[in-house]
Image (cartoon, rainbow, N blue to C red; front, top):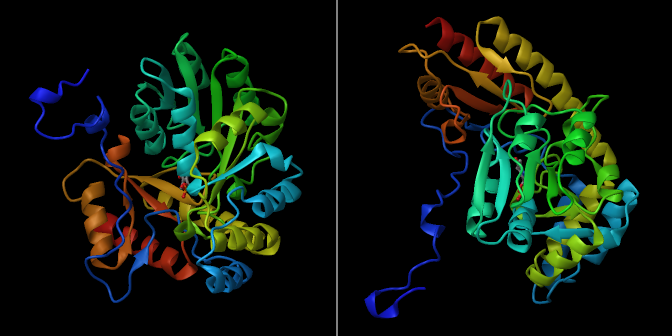
Amino acid sequence: MNTPSSQREPIPRVGIETIEPYVPGKSAATGGAKTYKLSSNETPHGPSPKAIAAFQSGAGSLEMYPDGASTKLRQAIANRFGLDANRIVCGTGSDELLHLLATAYIGPGDEGIFTEHGFLVYKIAILAAGGNIVVTPETNYTTDVDAILNRVTARTRLVFIANPNNPTGTYIPFDEVKRLHAGLPPQCILVLDGAYAEYVRRNDYSAGMDLVSNNANVVMTRTFSKIHGLASLRIGWCYAPERVCDALNRIRGPFNVSGPGIDAGIAAMNDIAHVEMSAAHNEKWLEILTREISDFGLKVTPSAANFVLIHFPDSPGKTAAEADAFLSSHGVVLRSVASYGIPRGLRMTIGTEEANRLTVDLLRQFVSR
Ligand SMILES: *Cc1c(COP(=O)(O)O)cnc(C)c1O
């Protein structure tokens, strides 16, 4: 219990001030005639022109509250993927949904699991809910199902995995996801964060919708921030069991998606050609960048997403921090991943052909200077 007589100011709940705030990728370069921001996994193609038009047409009714249930957006998503719209909840980005899941299912003393180089929002959400974090080791920067299952206890309420993971880019096949789910107790929810699902071109991959359909304890989260190019609008969604949706709907903001966001999201969801164009560009450059950067001696973790994790040596003059500074002085901004426990790595988002070519040229210069 707080003791008001000894407090001179309001004090946050226990644990809140131990949370390290999320640090976004940098926006500004230190030099270069033009800035190429490859630090936040944003699409180089922008959103669908139809989504921009839909957003703009919403400008005429900004005084009106939006539909708090995001009904038409949920319907558009349901139609696109053959899902039940009643089992979809939209959020202010998928970040909000990750937080709501933690708020709804984690209490003091409960545990939430994520992996060694997992997305940092999981940690923040679990701690903010008053829970304990359990971090499991990865194998070759990849989710290790056995390591997770080994750490499950009677207090485990949530297991978060991003598949593919950010910032590593690695994924686990659907067989492994199913094996993970099969090993979890029924009171524990498996959260499959599919922020990069649209980019994956692998026969053994699934974002896990079937697993959600057939189980009471699996949730898939998705976002409009990455391939749909609507990061600034803050729209995400999840597909979840009915009882989970019911819980999230009780505690979410009553108008958590804006009207123009709903309209733009619907148009983006329906512009399949735009998504396919973006995915094709990504597939092409993922291969080229991985090969060319590896060719001059830097290690690149095989990625299934829209970014690559590049590893640098520890020797003076060649480190990740020095590469970051060098690239930035020429206008290219990558993402330091030291906060993800990878001090020798930099994450590069796949950009336009111009940005990709420039980055490869600069990295080649850096390595041989
Ligand atoms: C970018 C990203 C998200 C998306 O967050 P939004 O709040 O929807 O913008 C979610 N999970 C992971 C792993 C991400 O990298």
